[in-house]
Length: 463
Image (cartoon, rainbow, N blue to C red; front, side):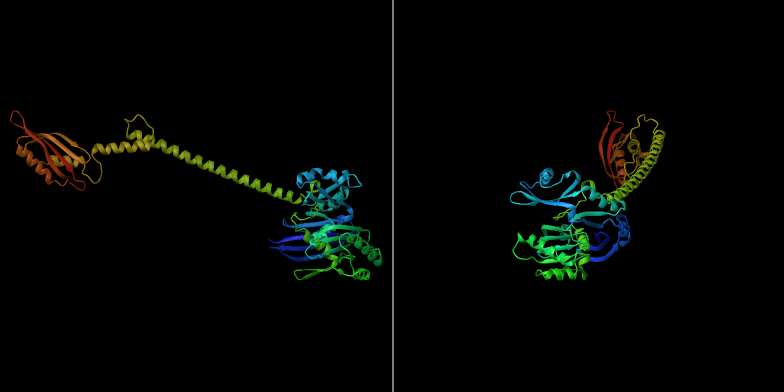
């Protein structure tokens, strides 16, 4: 996803806006514009025009106050816990400033651990001046995320292009000198130089302060790199006459050369890419924390939540109506099943589980009529086989018993031969697999023979 990094260099009468694109770690220049403004309200209008008046959620905007707007001190603490540092910060800072902190807003860079505890760079800015600077942006809904301090913001943005030495930021309202080591500001000076100051006077003041700034760090003159709208070839020539190693700074971003007058805006745009973990300031904290994007995002989230709630309500209502309809259909079917069951089995008095009771009753009926399975003959067919016995046998059947796979017959016959002939007749019937005479005996009068036959049904037979 492409992000836009927007740096806003606020001059006294001129504003320079640099728009960079950041995609997968690659930075490219989108536009660099310069416009005059008569008042701060006009600045907001021109800024929107320079970026087509459309701010995306991923845009990052940065600006800075001049270094003279703040008191900056480097404090040492015998501990490194951030909460403890915040708790004692105001007391330690107040003891080193010539003003009361009641009218100032304080901000600090991330603590740097040392052997004795931690070092912190702290800045105090007049609250009224900070509010006045931020007011046009907030009034115009311009999402200014970062408000830093010069020259710290410039060094943070250009740290990959700077050499160890002194960065001279010749701005319209003032000139600052920053002692740079490994991309960090060790110390800095502010000079009240502007466009009305002669070039020779500017060069002498810069040279004098540069020597004083670097004297405690290393002997000899340090390299000077100049940038800003007042960093001209004439100023470089005047400084070169006073010392060696003077450079008019320019950088290359993805093939495009950025000249010295526009470097502060580009530095602020590069500063906007910082996630807050670097050694930088951001006065957009506490009372002045940026809320514009959150307000818009909150409205969007509230609208999305309302739509989600409405959708959920519709879904729940629809499911409830469908459940009520299905339950109503189930109740009607149960009523029909109860009525059908009572009509079919009027002798039943208890109704608990209609399907189970219906299956049980049907099974009982099947057993009663001998319909144990389709692969066995019915009791009616067996009775028909029994009734088809020749009358000449003179057999009287007293009892007929049909079980799942066995038939038992008992009765009386005139002779033992009649019993044997009856058994032989059943053996010829395909319904029986096995027929045996279980018992046959003559009664005491010698007139009749009592018998009992046991026959096994043929599972695959048919009558």
